Length: 364
Image (cartoon, helix red, strand yellow):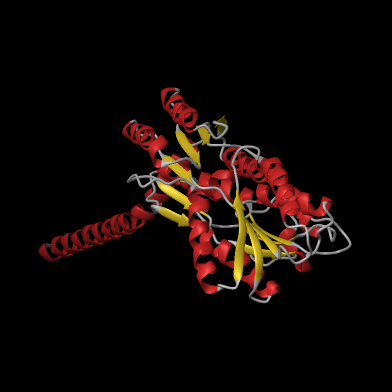
């Protein structure tokens, strides 16, 4: 009888032990799976919370097709994430841009994108936005405020690529015209490359330099016409280097209308309208270096939403430029920037800032 009781007790204890072990295994398994599962659940919840966000785009100017395509990229990416964009344009007036930034803060936008501008005009407003927990991502702005992610295009690379091609085509000598304007972050970076180019090629002489951000294409055309009259002979001017596509358009039109097609134009930035000129065999504009303007807008938005999501973002993001020349493009049909990747490697479709949770949020 005692043996039977002891045997039964032993069996019961063994069963209890195995049940406890099984529970322990389940708890251990559940515990080990919890961090990953909870992280995914948190990401999903945060991504769901990001729909319906109001985003302000504060621009120094919105001139030309490059800027309009950049805005398209911003709107496209925000709308894919369920948000809405309001654009504030200052028409190159920095005081107005500062006022627009304050308005975006006071209207309690969820996030702010900044396009161009200077530290003097923007720094106080940006700090105010951050104090109110409104994230900020800038493009081509001279800002160094902790917590702000700044995008730029690799401006020195773009300038170097076009200037080196100019030097090669000119045989390392000749007279050139520079169209450039001070006071803008990308222009200042492009100027550094130009200064290095001047030292490297002393036999390439600058005979004229000008540029304005107000009505840039029309003003460049007018000033280029005057320069062509000053230098009327073939060989007086070898090439024109322009630090902005709006300048390239104006210079190209003046040269083409004057019948001075021996003068070549090299530019920076590229839009659908620019491609039409670049593909035209009668146009003097032969090459440009650029980043897809729509990609710039898309990438800038992605980093803003990363901030809204609570992700850590870098202080500086450099977008890789691409060199585009006429001889890379088809002669039998007109192409646009959407189709350009078929002919120019590296153009468009940037994956920068594209996280898995952002892609998932787009699908929703």
